Amino acid sequence: MAQAQLTIDLGAIRANWRALAAMNAAETAAVVKADAYGLGADRVSKALAKAGARTFFVAQAEEGVLVRESLGDGPTIGIFGGHMEGDAPLIRDANLTPMINSIDQMLRHVESLPGHPFGIQLDTGMNRLGMEAGEWAALREIALSQNPFLVMSHLACADEPTHGMNEFQLQNFLQMTDGIKAQRSLSATGGTLLGEHYHFDMTRPGIGLYGGLPFVDAQPVASLSIPVIQVREVNPGESVGYGNSWVARVPSRIATISAGYADGIIRAMGPKAHVWANETRCKIVGRISMDLIGVDVGPVKDLPDTVELLGQHQSVDTVADAAGTIGYEILTSLGHRYARTYVGG
Image 1 (cartoon, rainbow, N blue to C red):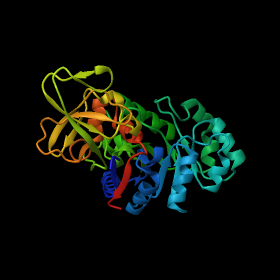
Image 2: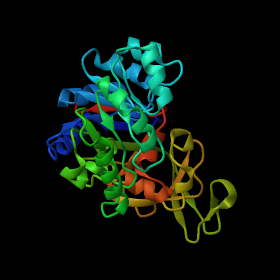
Image 3: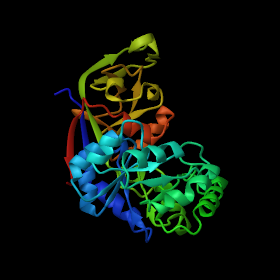
Image 4: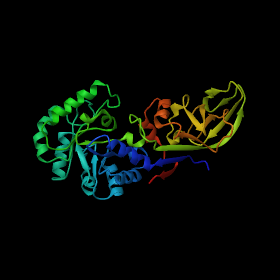
């Protein structure tokens, strides 16, 4: 079998949600956008609902429809992107709750779906989504009179606890929401870890549920094992892979494993990345190609049938460091060619 195996631990996802929920007295929602960070929104949403999550967030209405099909009636499903042109039928039929980001979105929502639930997103300094202070001041009384489900914002630097931007945004949020009766939310995973002043009425963890930083105590969720197709002896002076980018300096033993950038393994990680063969760390050699990767298995005494890229020995963030990126990108890049197995359901 030459198909790599991706194993997703739903029990670990539930444990991570419970651990983050235990850090605050607020409601703890769950972010399942981008197909639950690449791990399967259908299965992940059901697991989180089983753990006690009653509010979920996605990026787009289309994602929300799929989550609603998984969860059925009851849970609230918020849309970070708000109410976009043409979304009204999806929002209505799946009973989604758009987080309104502008006056234009507010007008679109109340005209097309009068009385339908909504939330408000404010821009407290990130300059990405949400109403700026002036726009919010013009709309505030009208919006609040419609009883929004939630008023939220998003922290730009929560993964850096000492960054001054955190306090700056907190003060802006307090000023913009002073005196309102609606629920308030400012924090995702990083903000949850910053402490009670950032929790308000709801926290919205995302990456921490899936085993990524900045939640250093998260249980690992995804493991990826890749079959070994072939092993060969490579003499000094011989190269491996495209472009002759790696040349053996000493007699070497090279395994070719069955995965590549078509499976979401980022090509740029090649020069710095490793896999594990049982308890032995093995360097990737040569360029990562579409379907194949070369690995130096010279130090391995008894080579197993598969090697580990993600799992017990290295986290998504370790792999991300080798690629010069973040754990989010590693997870959301995972391809659909893997044989996926869910455990801990």
